[in-house]
Length: 433
Figure 1: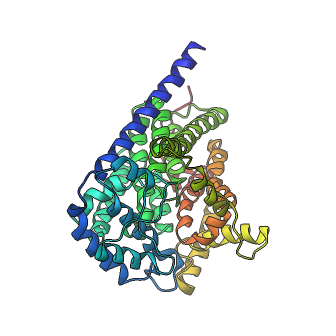
Figure 2: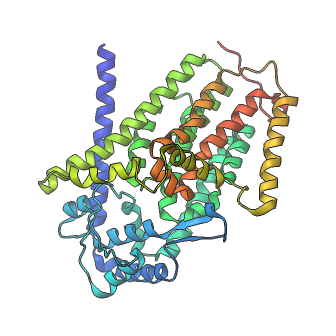
Figure 3: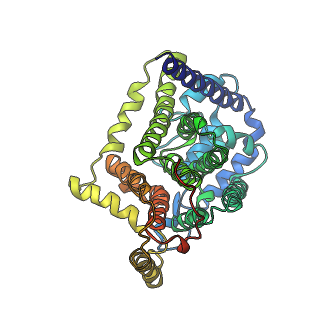
């Protein structure tokens, strides 16, 4: 009992320490002078107005849609921070909004006419401004997209490189395929998309480092902090990937390196880190609302609750079953390469046939398949999210579909377990102790 209390206190202490650091970071960047970013914000506004707020990078391919709507709002919030009242301004996260105009036009009008903010966006942290606002002192948004592409490329290369160095070739291949099938090459070119992928990769890199050094007691803290950072940075897009992808990688590593967990132990580990990730994620949201109420001296919940029903439900003239099936179906339809015409559809079907062929013909009777059930549970998490937030998933399927990066990875790892090891270059597992 005493150890349990000590453990809980450690998690509470870490939570509030990280919360303080993240809050101070946002307040610190709000102190940057508006004049220091004004030139690059104006160039960014000019770039945004040259394009639609939503447009397909490849015509006819919904999964290539880039979201300039959310990016424009984020830049607008970064521009409107008040260095004289930084704490209040980061709580309100306000920007100028005109219902009669698109957000790119509103941003242009803001920077050219010096308009004051009139619309709050309090329900999110908008913590990505701790990165964006300093970058805006040096770069315009077009250049920032290039910086994000380089960063994402470096992190992906680093993670795959670590796995290859550790002779986890099959894991590296499965992870790479999952990124390809969720069109990762578009991710850096919309800030709304990139933060979760960067967070996922950082958690995965640290987690893999801990896993190969047998530091499994650190994983709870890693996932709790990961949940906190996800909420801090995200605009509600593909938040589950920062839990699901690192978890799948760690389960594989544990099974490959030690093979000492029973199914129950694997489920308990997964449940623990998922719960801690959830505590971090939800805790950050509640913390924002509590801190905002204290700092601003008013109950901010009315600003929050008015949007909850819209995310959970909404009304676009569809029945409940049609709504939910549409949310799931539209997300599935964006998986690469199915959207790329007849050749893409043929390639996708051929890939599915090949997977079934390998699983049936090269079934490995002697393989330990206990983790397949855990992988399957993780694979279903994106669809649970689509069902619960079906309005959001239905309308924003062109980016929420990337949560299936974990589903694809899980399916490939299940295939690996079901087939002879020689098909996946997997080294011999260590015997159970």
